[in-house]
Image 1 (tube, rainbow, N blue to C red):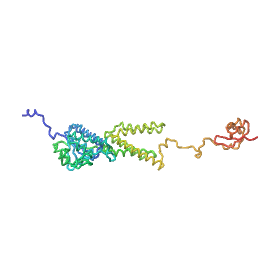
Image 2 (cartoon, one colour; image 1 turned 180 degrees about the vertical axis):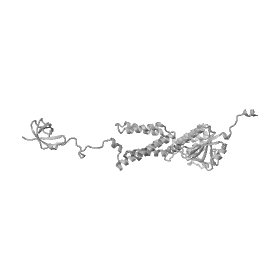
Image 3 (cartoon, rainbow, N blue to C red; image 1 turned 120 degrees about the horizontal axis):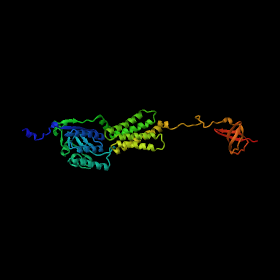
Image 4 (cartoon, rainbow, N blue to C red; image 1 turned 90 degrees about the vertical axis):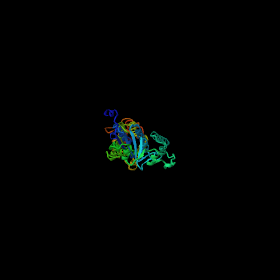
Length: 425
C-alpha cells in the first residue's frame, strides 16, 4: 500500500500556497509602477501562487498605466484585480490587464477618457493610441472589446448601460459581471480568498516603503512642476540676497527632492544628478570667463538633466516652461518694481567710477602756474617746451604758431595740459 502511494506525487495543499496582496491606490504615476514592479519581483522570487492587486484609484498618467499593464501581462503568475471601490480611467486599463477581475458590491470600473493636464480631451493621436490600448487589453483577457472602447470613447453607443452617445461607460459590479468584465462580486477580501480557494494559503501583504510613498508623491506631474518652479525661483531670488539664506536653501532642497523622488521611482540615475551638477558648475564659471559659450553649455546640461530624470518628455517640457516663465516674471519684479540688483554681479563686476566729484583726478591740476611767464625753448606748433624759472614745461599755445626764444604767459591749466599765450614785445 505504501509503495502504491509513493508512485504518485503529492499534490500541493492550500496551506503550502502563498498569495501576495498589493494595494493599487491613489493616482496612477511612475512611482506606483516602481512599487508594483518590486512587489511582482518579490512574489515571483517567493514562487507565489497568485498576486491580488487591490485597486482603488481614480486614474492617472497614461504612460504609467501602460507600463503597469505590461508588468501584469509579462508575469507568469496568476494575477487578480480586486476592485475595491473604484477602477476609473487608467485604473480600468490596469484591471483589464489582469487574468481575473473581482469587484465588491457598489464598486465601479470605467470612465477612461484620455485628457491633458488642463482637463481637456487629448488630441486625435493620443486618443487613437488609448482606444487601441483599451481594446487590446480587453481582447487579450478574452473580454468583448466594445465595452472597453465605450469606457474611453464617448461616440460608442451603449444606452442600455447608461452610456449613450456623448457619455462614457462606467460599469457597476452587477453590470461588469453581466458583460463578462468581472468573474464575480464578493463582499470583502476574505470572501475573495474563499472564492479563489486560497482561504488556507499564506497571505503576504506588500506595503509601500516611506521612500516609495515620497517617490509617488514627488513623481506626480503637478508636484514635479511645483518643485522645479520653487527650485528655480529660490536660486534666482538668492542672487538678489546677501550671503546664503532661505531662498537658496528652498531652491536647492526642492531640486534635491525632485531628483531623489525620481531616483527612488527608478526614473533617474546618478548620471542625471552628475549632469545637473556639471551644468550648474559651468553656469557659475561663465561669470568669470567671457564669451558666453560656457554658460550656454551649462544651461543645456541642466535642462538635459531634467529630461533624463523625467519619465515623460511632454510633461517635463511643460514644467520647464512654467518654471522659466515664473522665474523671468519674478526677476522683472525684483529689478523694475523693487529696484534690486543681483549681489553676485556686484562681487565680480567693477561698479565704481573715477569721477572728479568723487575726488578722483587722473593728473594734478597745477593752477599755481597760471599768470607766470616763461621763454619758449622750442617753437610751439602749437605744442612745445617752455622754461618757467628753472622748470621746463610741456605746453600748447592757444592755436597760433610761436617761435623759439619768445616770452609767453601761462593762461590756463587743465590737468596735465598747460596753455600759453605769447607776450607782445
